Amino acid sequence: MLPSCQGHGPVGRGAAPDNEEKDMTHVAGRIAELPQFAAPAGGRLTDEMRAAFDAAGVIILRDFCSVRKCAELKARAEELVEAFDPTEVRSVFSTTTQNQLDDRYFIDSGDKIRFFLEDDAFDERGELRQPKHLSLNKMGHAMHDLDPVFDRFSRTPELAALARRLGFCKPAIIQSMYIFKPPRIGGEVVSHQDSTYIYTEPESCVGFWFALEDATLENGCMQFIPGAHKGPLKARNYRRPDGTLTTDILDAGEWPEEQRLPAEAKAGTLVVFNGRAPHMSAANRSSVSRHAYTLHAIDRTSHYPAENWLQRSPDLPLRGFE
Ligand SMILES: O=C(O)CCC(=O)C(=O)O
Image (cartoon, rainbow, N blue to C red):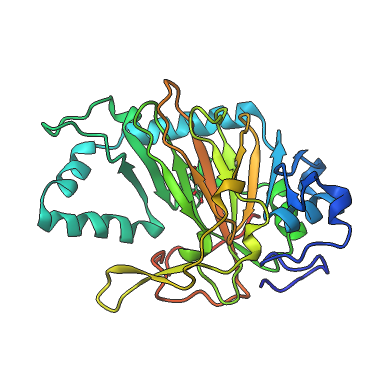
């Protein structure tokens, strides 16, 4: 669990407050709706919001940023995509030997801006089915430190205040991802906990997911099982000594997937979630994209293992939200 800096309690697994029943809509003892609020002034979560986050492991904050800011980030992403040559990545995907390159392309991306195509991007002849900008799965993982427009979006007084209210002592943004979820071929993201990949001791990972376009059930919005972050971490992914990645199962139990609830979100909404909160998003078979930008923060007072897949060069030191 994350040390508490301001007496707000841990971000970790978040003990439910005594008055939880009064604050949230419950059915038969279960949280029946994901907690949702208008974004608090200056990012300063109220006690009620903080309690809702602790109970559900997730909170939806409407209008956290303006639609204009979302449009600016989308325009910058478009410029970066314009400069990207998909044939570089296509060759990476093409042969067995190059599958290893494919892994390296991913593993070495922690301090770079790299592009990842959807599984269904290419047809049987190896040609892109859709134009390049409609074929991308995501861009990652260090735009927030390498690109000025992404840097500005990722570091605001509101986000810094929010991190403080979540109990971070020394927040550090460890990764950024721009997720394209393109029309028709946007892939499913299966249920997972982010602390599996962004593991610290004690656990401190929190996700900050911004809808840059309206996210609906049709185009594959995020979905969460409220309260499931109080269960164990089910898996841990890490680098083996030979540099390849593996995942150990720590707990074979199942999540109550039938309790999963959609986090539909208008552009400008921020969804904040605990690193232990299981979440997923369905494939996008609709005719519209679902762009999102996501930041993951850890606390620098926790230990960050050298075996975590996501590593960065000392030339690019970690920075917080300020
Ligand atoms: O945007 C999505 O569909 C998945 C994002 C996700 O899993 C994350 O940000 O942790």
